[in-house]
Image (cartoon, rainbow, N blue to C red; front, side, top):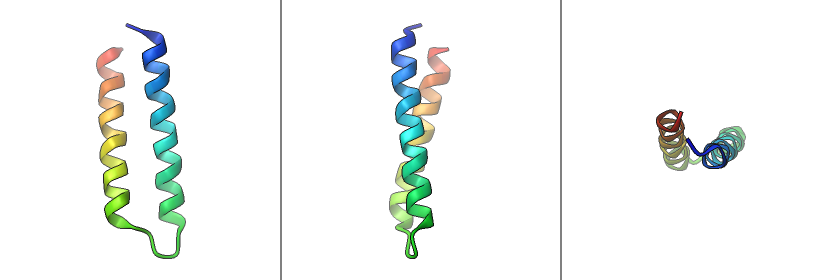
Length: 52
């Protein structure tokens, strides 16, 4: 297991979480963008679990 790779994935996962929160807090959130970001976040989570 490459710890640097997992750390990079974790950073990307957290950044996506922030982007999702920012978009959801907008007066008129882009639901398509939110859905896309959540799919990418899930993909990263699955990749992190596979690395562990």
